[in-house]
Amino acid sequence: MSGSGGMTCRELVELVTDYLEGAMAPDDRARFEQHLALCPGCGTYLEQMRRTIALVGRLAEESISPRAWNELLRAFRDWRAGREGSAPES
Image (cartoon, rainbow, N blue to C red; front, side):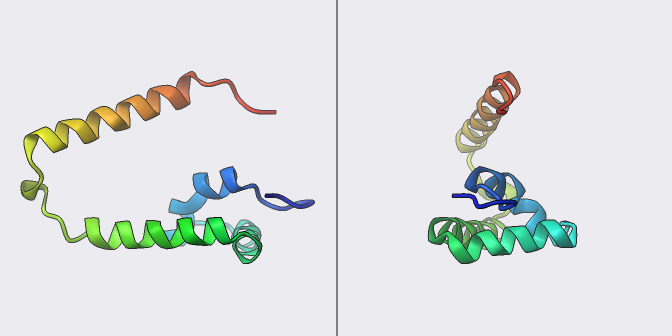
């Protein structure tokens, strides 16, 4: 979803961390919140991210098994390699 000068769902997903950390420029924050007001799916995504952060923030690194730790690292590396190897969108 995107309107003239609006933000796409993909942009919102890429900026959600900045939004949650309060690190967005005021104009970008306004576009972000405008998109949220019009897109229930992105509102749900933002809420899921907030819940995930709240839950993960309670985990101690020692409570994660070595196997799970390695799987998370592999998943992140695979995700990052895919993003770095993808062609930019126009």
